[in-house]
Length: 166
Image (cartoon, rainbow, N blue to C red; front, side, top):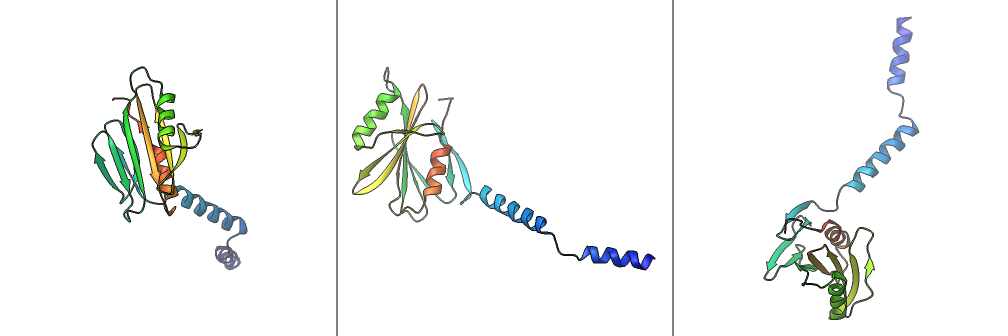
């Protein structure tokens, strides 16, 4: 009798996994892949804002609170300007001034906050993102002529946060 029992256990132990188990494993792998970012990120804190920057991207600081973000290949750029709102001037007026300056499209409200608009410079389509709080504004302009970095640039936009301790 013990011999039959041991045979039954060994047959059960080597029985192939059920279809349900395979589905569970595949769903788990899919979720894991979706949660992994396309590139490792590093948090960067600046005087007036913070942002997640893709690993390997170069950050150059220019005078007057201007920052340039470039991928290793140097074939795209994101430029951030962050400054206090001018006295007694609503953020909507500042946004309107930028749209006029760039001859941009009608600004669109983003679900995650801020407004976006598109514009053409040197024959290439560019995008802009405007974010503000009660004291400061931030303008991110993006040039990705070969459309190689849409996920990275969206991540930059989504991770931008104005600092409260300004």
